[in-house]
Image (cartoon, rainbow, N blue to C red; front, top):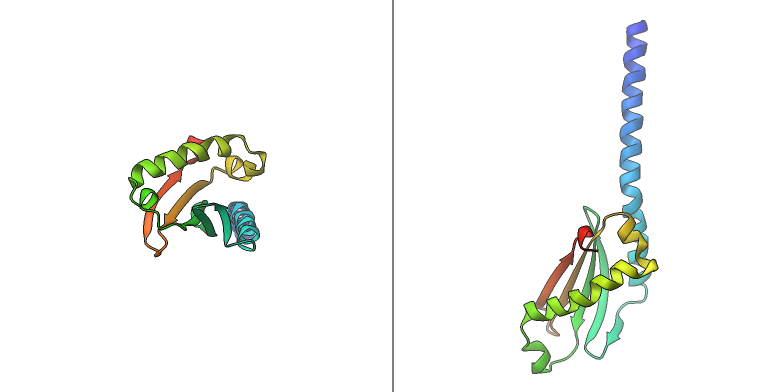
Length: 135
């Protein structure tokens, strides 16, 4: 009887520990989903003369994704080298991620950010990701 109780206590402790770990892990996911819903309520959102934020998504593994559309048919923009274009935008994004207090949720929880830019016809122009160690 004593051994059964000990095993039951150990099993319940293990289950409680696993639930705690799962709930802690999903806590950030719930926060990210809430942030995404708040942003999406304002979308589509014009960012500048050439860019629209369509929506955001939360993906498994603490990934927060921004989905943009380039709203111009300008050949100078769409004819640009996507790798160079992505590099330029990434260089602008990283300092903001490092310094903006509103983005603490990302920094404090090692969130990976993915940025996808589509052409006006919906095809992908470029994408890049920013890993936690980059910001």
